[in-house]
Amino acid sequence: MVNQSSPLGFLFLGFEHPGLERILSVIVLISYLLTLVGNTLIILLSVMDPRLHSPMYFFLSNLSFLDLCITSFVPQMLFNLWGPKKTMSFFGCSVQLFIFLFLGTTECIFLTVMDFDRYVAVCQPLHYATIIHPHLCGQLAAVAWAMGLAQSIVQTPPTLRLPFCPHRQIDDFVCEVPSLIQLSCGDTTYNEIQLAVSSVIFLVMPLILILIIAWAVLRINSAIAWRKAFGTCSFHLTVVTIFYSLVISVYLPKNPYAQKRGKFFGLFYAVGTPVLNPLIYTLRNKEVKRAFMRFLGTNSNSKTL
Image 1 (spheres, rainbow, N blue to C red):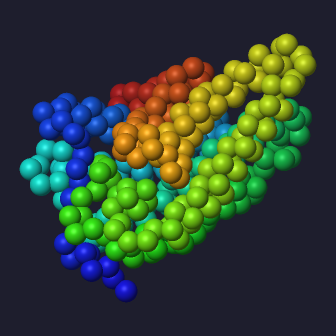
Image 2 (cartoon, one colour):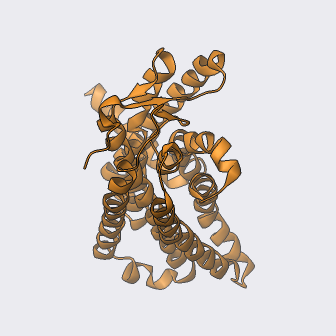
C-alpha cells in the first residue's frame, strides 16, 4: 500500500542559513567534479594497465565505481541548493533511498574485504597468490553487491510505508532512513528495531572484523615487517576510520547529537569520502603514479603518430 503522502513528495530543509547555501553548493560541485575525475581515472588505470591487474586494484576499482554511483544524487542536491523550492517527489525519494542503502551497505562490506586482502598480503605474503586468487575476488565482490542489494530490498519498503507528517519536511539534504523515521508521525518501533539490527550486522560486525585484522597486523614482531605493514595498511585504515565514523554518527540509533547534526555527517559521507578515497589511496601509491605516467606516455605517443 502506498503512503498517502506519496503524491505530495517531500520538502528538504537543508541548510539553516540560506545565505551560505551558495557557498556550500560551490564546495559540493567542486567535490563532485573531483570525484568524477579521480574515481574514473582509478578505474581506467586498473583496467588498462596490466601491472595493476591484482586483487588490490580490483577491489579498489570496485570501490571507485561505488563512489561514482553514490554521488549520483549530487546534481539533484545542487538543484535544490540553488533553487527556491527544495522538493523531491515521493518516487524520487524512494529511488534515492534504495540506492543509498544499496551502495552504502555494499561499501561497508567492500572495506572489510579490502582489509582482509591487506591482511593476507602482509601476514601471508608467500601464500597471497594462492589465497586471494581471481575466482575468490569475484566471489567476494559478488557477495558484497548481493548483501547491499538484499539490505536495501528489506529496509526500503517498511521505511516508505511510514505515516509521514503532513508538513513532509525532511531535515536533511537527501532521503535517508534516519531522517525519514524522524519525519513519521506514527509508531516507528519496528523501523527503529530494523535499523538497529541492520546497523549491528552491516556496520558494527564489519568494523569489529576490521579491528581484529588490524590488531593481528599490529602484533607483528619484526620492525621491518611492521613498517611494511604500516605502509601497506595505513591508507586503508584512514579510509575505514573516516567512513565508519561518519556512517555510525548518522545511523547510530537514538543518538541525540546525530539527530541534530546527522545531516552534515551524511553530507560529508556522501560527498566528501568519494573525493577523499582516490586521494588517500593514490597520494603516496607509487604503482598508481607509475601507471598514470605510463598512461600519459601512451596517450602522448598516440597523438604524435
